[in-house]
Image 1: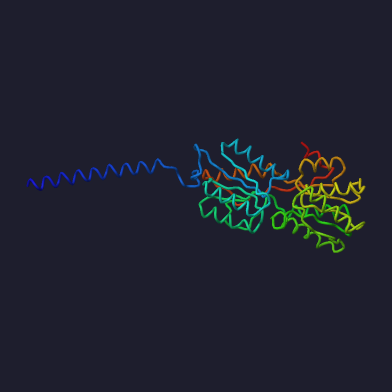
Image 2: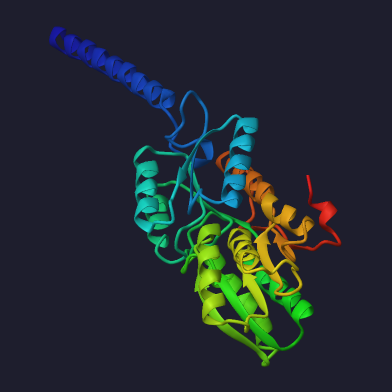
Length: 330
């Protein structure tokens, strides 16, 4: 009987110890950080959400405007944000994704350098449990959590329709494109050619990239004026920076009246609006950089906090001409 009593006491002590250890383990688990992306993920610092942003390039005014709007909105919402410059290089932007993945950011927002190549980076981030949001330019991936931007096909159609109105249904044009492979370049080209199909008497003398750059637009236009001397009737540029380069080249050759060779761009950056006001640029197509930047942060934060979001958010383009310019001047 004595032996049996000792055994019972020992078993009770062991059971008590197990219960204590189990309670401690449970308490430790509950005090750890959450890995649920809707609860902030593992990238939180001091309780704040940490969002990484990479843009295809920060050397033009439009993407800087998006970036500035993202920073302001993040500050307003109490979110940590870090912005990277993709520098128009796929390898650079992929490396930035890998860095954000390794540092366990809560979310990534990006405008891709290349519509196809950057799909691989999206896959890596999503596999690591980090939601990815697109802004301004598209990527060929079905794994984006949401996309915030404007319909670039529409932008191409708006500017080509305007040039037809200015030039008439026949004549010769040159087209300045963005970086080849970027979604804006691909889709704006589609929109321009959608309209051109209706006007077989309009001939495209040349169609080439100037990489969203004013200096490259200037150089390209100078080359075209030499190659197609006296033949160019209008310039269709896929953004304002290149359009302003074209205007500069035309002025260098003595063209002072904007109606001699009409030029149109896209984005409605401040220099373009001033050029329209000063009678140098015929028109631009307003793209709401501030709206896109702010919305991208709002959508990402809403998602991370568990709110319902849409798969796409579209912000419309608007044609800006001398007649309605005052609406867009700050």
